[in-house]
Image 1 (cartoon, one colour):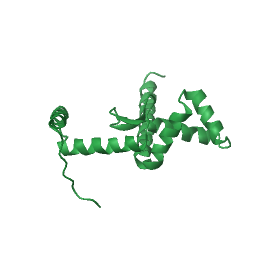
Image 2 (image 1 turned 120 degrees about the vertical axis):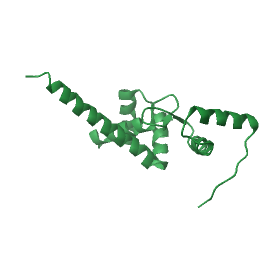
Image 3 (image 1 turned 180 degrees about the vertical axis):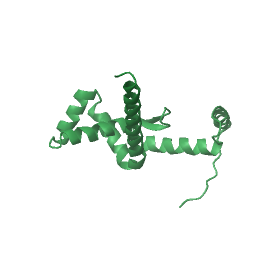
Image 4 (image 1 turned 60 degrees about the horizontal axis):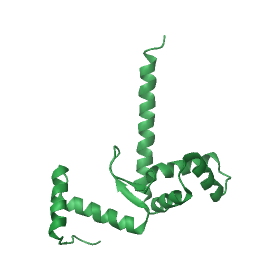
Length: 146
């Protein structure tokens, strides 16, 4: 295991980092720098992947497309629904049904292959949130029915 690493940044980078941290209470300069170094290395490893913030937190997304977890979830669902389709036919079906290109799907799956726990946790979070929403909606609707 590698220990702490000291890094020196140019003055403009240090200023932007300090400004970023000031706008994000609770985040340290060290944590912000580590996040962006890690994400930069991942984007270098997996061209076509970028990161963005959202309601579920920071997550990997395909450039010009949806989040990686959304693509992985669609692939798992399609494979469950159509277990006998060839890989290529599955990709064609996904592209026709979602508008997400086969290239984007492959990019997302490559990333998922390297970081399955991260992506699977987002899939599980989305499924829990959907189930909770459906339960709440049913409960609310039950007040209106006789």
